[in-house]
Each structure stands twice: as structure tokens, then as C-alpha cells.
Length: 262
Ligand SMILES: NC(=O)c1ccc[n+]([C@@H]2O[C@H](COP(=O)([O-])OP(=O)(O)OC[C@H]3O[C@@H](n4cnc5c(N)ncnc54)[C@H](O)[C@@H]3O)[C@@H](O)[C@H]2O)c1
Image 1: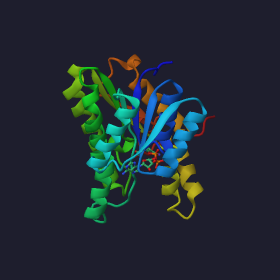
Image 2: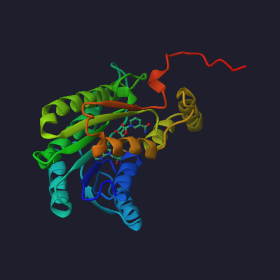
Image 3: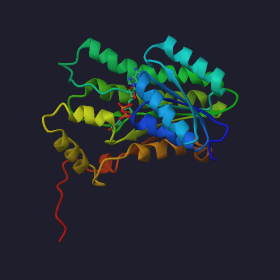
Image 4: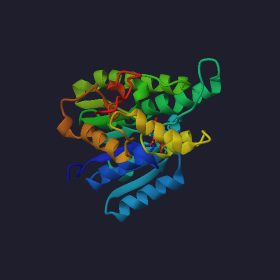
């Protein structure tokens, strides 16, 4: 199988895109460290992977806390072996503009989305040095553009792209590739939590479907497929890249009216 003999760390792997990625990598032969702050869903992800014959273990860590990340990766290294692949998917979405965002909210979002991705890389990179490896950071279309009222989230995801490019340059000579994916709307708990803030959650999800030129939102597995490709040697000449996985969302000229076809 394509990831046989590989050890993969996936943060945010208890649910959503991280869970789909952890499951896919394990199904394709990797030994997977499921890293998440959420122990209940993280354990369930591991149990599901094992039921299907894959190899995975859960390591609880808050990615914003360096000591926790360092300890979790040290345990994973001891139990699974040196890390070959890292996927950083842990993330949170919060709301506010430049006037309504508090320092506390700014710090919370930066600490998880941006500092967390750096922490995970800092913990895994030493294993990749002299052996090669691959890192895929889950950014967002909001790493390249912005919706309204998501200041901290948008800034953090632009930062994840900077982190990706910077690490790609620093470690290219050691055969460590670092790339980012920028999903549009994906059908995960994050989306449904966001939609539930509106009195008509289903209308929000419908609006998300309608805004993507492809006419629907993504499944977590569709994003995991691109992550798995970037993590694999088949993408051996791809580094520092920022891949949109957005059903055409960022390609559409904003405000383009939908004209009924004759
Ligand atoms: N769902 C979307 O529409 C969408 C779109 C673009 C980008 N993204 C990004 O994709 C990534 C995954 O999000 P998702 O949609 O799968 O959401 P999700 O909420 O299902 O998954 C996020 C995971 O991260 C974990 N997590 C949160 N804070 C953590 C912390 N401090 N330490 C460790 N783990 C933590 C959560 O427990 C959860 O398991 C995020 O970085 C998100 O910003 C999501």
C-alpha cells in the first residue's frame, strides 16, 4: 500500500478533515498518530481505524501548548517510530471584526491555528531531517481571501500560508516538502457549529452550497485525497505550494450573476 512503513501524525484528527485524513492514511498503510484535544472523538477515530484493520493510536494534546505537543509526539515516536508525515488540521473558527475582536479571542485563534501548526512542525521536523518527509498544513480559502467578520481566523490562515512557504524554503534542501491546502466549505462539525449560530442553520448550509461554482460543499474525504497526494512521494517535486480545494470558489469573479441557460 502507498503509505506502508510510514508514520503519520495528524493533528485535529478527532473529527472532520483531520479524521478523514487519518483514516485514509491508515487505510493506505501508514501508522497514524491521532493527535487532538478531544479525547472522546479521538479515541473513537482510532477505534474505527483499527476496526477496519488500520494502525493508529491516540495522543491527547492542545496544539497551542508546546509542552503538550512535544510530549505527545515523543510518545508517538516511541510507540510508532520516527515521524515521516505531518498533517496539521487542528483549527478553530471564531467571529469578529477589527473593532469587536478582543485580545483574548485573537490570541486563542492565533494560538491554535497558527502557533499550533508551527508547534506540530517543530516537534516532527527533527525526525524528518536527514531522512526526508512531508508536511501538509490545512489552511483555508480564507488564507487567500476573506469573508466578513472573521478577522482573527483570516489572519491566522494567511499566517499558515506564510508558515508553509517559510518552512518549505528552510527545509527543501533536506528533502522535506511543506505544502498547504485551502479548502472551501467542507461538511464537518466546524461548518455545522458555525451554521447553528444562525436561526436557520440549513439555510446557511444551502447558501454555502450555492456559492461554490461546483454547486455543493466538499466532503472531508475530498480534501483528504488532496492532502494524501501532497503527503506522498508522487508529489515529490511539489513544495511551498498552496492548493485550493474549493469547488472553484476563488476562481469565480465575485458577484457574478447566475444566468439561466436557455
Ligand atoms: N469545514 C470547513 O468548511 C473548513 C474550510 C476551510 C478550512 N478548514 C480548516 O480545516 C481544519 C479542520 O477543520 P474541520 O472543518 O475538520 O473542523 P472540526 O472542528 O471538525 O475539526 C477540528 C479538529 O481540531 C481539533 N482541535 C481544535 N482545537 C484544538 C487544539 N487546541 N489542539 C488540538 N486539537 C484541536 C478539534 O477537537 C477537532 O477535532 C481547520 O484548520 C479549519 O480551519 C475547514
